[in-house]
Every structure is written in structure tokens, then in C-alpha cells.
Length: 214
Length: 214
Image (tube, rainbow over the protein chains, first blue to last red):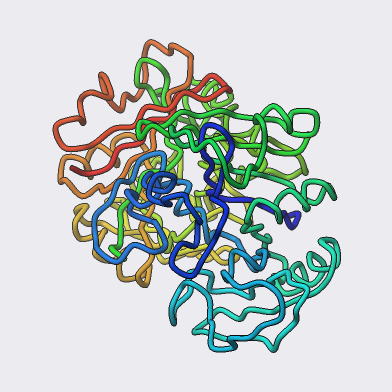
């Protein structure tokens, strides 16, 4: 089995925006209300952050339950981990996810400001100042043969696409227009020179875009 | 997490037929050419029986790669295991799958003719003469908290539906008409009194039907 680099459940607006600008502690998605993007996922039975029973088990649930299947490590940008910029001042900051992060694997956080690894339950965050290929080599090694999830945000995914290091992308287009913010693409067609694409509308109103390498 | 009973990748023709009559050693699907039903699955990268690299990683692949995710046991009817009927005469018969069956878990084979368990690689077949609820209790216990796959064939799935023991069904409708054979349903609508349904067409030509309990 090849060891893939996979983007999963990455959600953007119809105009390609995944998060707002002006991220802050109170607003991890900046001016964008994440509910407007992620309600499709929160409605599924397998949403990793779900705390109560219930939820749908149709098409959307196949994607949320695939989140952890055969994943051995995650790579994320610093802004997915933290609202802070520059040298770490608050070493008490442990990410947005509390004491039980939903990753359950090593996580490699790309940052120009290294710090000691941080272990919360069965997730360990490593802070790495390196280019995508170098970080990926570390993540592949840590994943022990399983796939590597590329968790975002936008600039991290764009860097990895630029370096041609992504094997598959699952991007969910939500039926909202945001107008401004951090933009993944002008159009899904931007990737068609290098990827096959299945476009799959869901009864929830979102449209799943499944890309895999040609 | 609830422990589910799941039908996965079960494929029927447009007229609801999953296998032909007159099963034999040479023709496990009787008069039906299985290629006509299963070519959608064989084209995917994650098809469990794939022996060469390659294959698609779009929508259909989500279903074939979900085959083993969080599955701890399978239940199958005797006719999925063997072309033979009545008391076991050929104890050398080890199933259709060779020395490395694609299940990798305990498998419970429903039969009126018990025999000693059979272990091939990391799959062990148990032969059980009992009603669906009793077999399911054994499979749940063996699955150690993971889900139980209900593997078919038609009469086994119909028995479990009759006993209301199925939580989710993924049934793939292939764009072929077979006319006669073992029929799962007259129409997917037969299940709508008890299940939600997402109908998802694939670019391969098949239509995925995803049922989950109301």
C-alpha cells in the first residue's frame, strides 16, 4: 500500500474561502462563523468532536468517519494550532481542542518558532521550522506506513500543492458566499491539470470534491 | 460509540438481483457474471482483492476503503462461503478466497451443518447453526466493540432485515438488468418505512444507496 498525503473534510465557501482574516483567541476562523461552513459535518454521527449520540449516517458521514481511517500523522500550519504570531509567549497555550485533541497521532505544526513537543492524551504536537518536504519526511516516518493527513489551513495546503506533495484532496464546498478571507482557490478547476475530480452533491446541501492524482 | 451492524458494498442489478441461481464451484454467482456487477469496485485503488497498484481514488474508493474500517467481525450465509449444500463432505474446502481471505477478523458462517473452526492467516471462520440474533450476539462479542459487517448473500441479509437487526446498509445498484436470480428487493423504497436513504450517483455509472435507521 502506498503511503498517501491526504486532505480530508477541508471546507470552503462557494467562493473558495476557508477562514476569515483577523483570527483571534475568541474567533479561530476570524470574521467567518465556522458554523456556516461546518454544519454539514456537525450533523453526522461520526464527527470527531461530537459529544452526544445521534447524527446522520448517509453520504456526509462516510467522509467524517474516514477522518481517522489509516491516518498515522497530521501536518498543520501554526495558525490552525494557535491564534498567536511570532515567538511563543504563552507556553500555556495547548491548542483549541482541550485535553483530548481529536487527532490521536503525532501532529507536526509548521512554525518559524520552535518549542518543545506537547503531549495531550494520545496526541503529541511537534513544532517544526522546515520546508514542506522536510516536514513531510518526518510525518511519514512517524506515521509508520499509514497515511499522512494534511490538516490545513489554506496557506499550508497551498504550499504543499505548490510543492506537488498532495496525493488526494477532499474539499467540501458549502452553499454560502463569504466575499473575503483566506482563499483556497478561484475554482476547483485550478487543480484539473494534475488531478482527477469527482464532484458529488450531498442531500445536506454541500458538494464534495474528491481529487486524486493523474 | 454504538456497535453497528453494517451491510457494505453489497451490489445488485437495477432489477435488484445480487447473484444467479445454480451456484457451482466454477460459478460462485451462478448464471450471473460477477464482473457485470462488481467492475465498479475492481476499478478502485482500495478494492480488497486488488493485486496491482493503481486504481481510482474518487467516490467509489471511499466505499471500498471503508470495507475494513472499524469492522471487528463478519457474518455470512453458507452460500457465500461455499457452493456445497447439506452435510459437509469436502472438509478440504476453505472458501473462495485462498490462503489470505480479505476479512482479517472472525467470520461467522450461518449453516445447519456445523464443523470445526477454520483459520486462514488472520481470518477464522466459525460455523454456527443458530438464528440471526444468536449469531449476531456471538459476532458482537468477537468484534470487541467494533462494528459487525453483514456480508450477505441475499437470503442472509433478508433474514437480518426481517429480524430488524441491521443498522446501516450500503447497496450499490449497477446499471445492468439481470432478469432472474436471487433478489434483494423489488425496489429500494421497500426499506423507507424504517430507514433514511441517501441516493448517490457515481461517475462510474453505479448508484450508491446509503440507508440508516430512522
